[in-house]
Image (cartoon, rainbow, N blue to C red; front, side):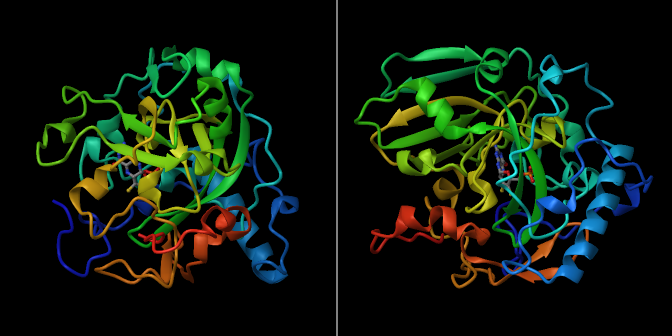
Length: 345
Ligand code: MTE
């Protein structure tokens, strides 16, 4: 159900407690673990003592991640597993600890598999290999490309990103993938293309949520061509040093860390270039609450709750939300000449 309970910070119902009891804390540092050198300069974010505390927590989180990994136990070896772990791009750093993989991979929004957070098991029904992606619309030559071909055409890199859900919780995650701009270059859009529209698969046989006919399936999202060209816009194919687990939106999803999480569409099967602004899934359902731009801004409340703070997954700490989720230096210029646009919903 959408917007259950006025005043709840949720699309649906996020009142269920996190399943932290599942975590087994075995201290083991994976080879892709973060080092202190990757921390954001302290003058930018936190004092040094806080940083040390946070990186210590990250170590524990990574250890927990190594212990249980919801979703992987059931899958066959991924045909792209040889590409991981990818080299980390050191330009993308965090101001806080990484969220343990066990937490991130068992607390997901993926309405195709249910309108609650515990969808990871249901998502294992999705067959992600082979996986075709259609690229069409205003391009020189429409094409269908297999994911396994695509992922070997563009070098992969790892980036540490923040993720801020419109429901006022946040996480941090080591994504692996490639810049969206690389995919745009491969697609060769015409100069008339103004937007990129993304679509998730449609298969109600496996995605039971898609049998709920009151939702406007398939899930759709969109960005402007300029946003797609921003270096932060990232096509994600892996997380935590291995191919994406299904609940994260395998085999390929988007990460737009300066926007609310609903813009980061999962399990993409179609990418279209268009001169018409796409209407996204949530905008289609609740236009007054979920707009096209959806840039993070603590000063602009959601109609039913404040966006001033966020709850960090796993620790439960409340921290102040930052404009553009802290990525203003990289993205604010995209919007500087826009007047009268609802940029923050
Ligand atoms: N993409 C699809 N196809 N379906 C969804 O329900 N949920 C969005 C986004 N992408 C969603 C989606 C929302 S609301 C969020 S917050 C993020 O995915 C959650 O990503 P995560 O589960 O990896 O944390």
